[in-house]
Length: 119
Image (cartoon, rainbow, N blue to C red; front, top):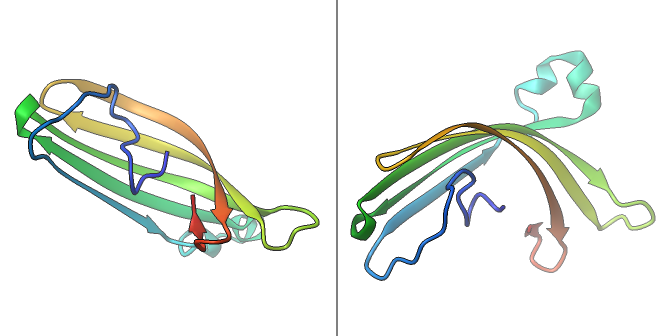
């Protein structure tokens, strides 16, 4: 799921009718750390990290999560404008009403040519 719009480790969905607060942050390092290692530089891997929070007073929920991972961008053959990325991530979260252990996620994201951003 898009980490700018959804939570990665929230285990359930529920309606919220009153005011709630949420925030998401994603940072793509674009190989700034892994490019220091010669083998990883040839693999063209990119690091990504992020966090999110949700405060829903109506449900007495305070939730926070953090994730980190590695992504690789692939170009579609015979179409130079199309591309997609595959990533492997580690997600952890904490909340006052439930507990989530560390989870591993795999994501596939495509490039939206019209909006010029990852979907």
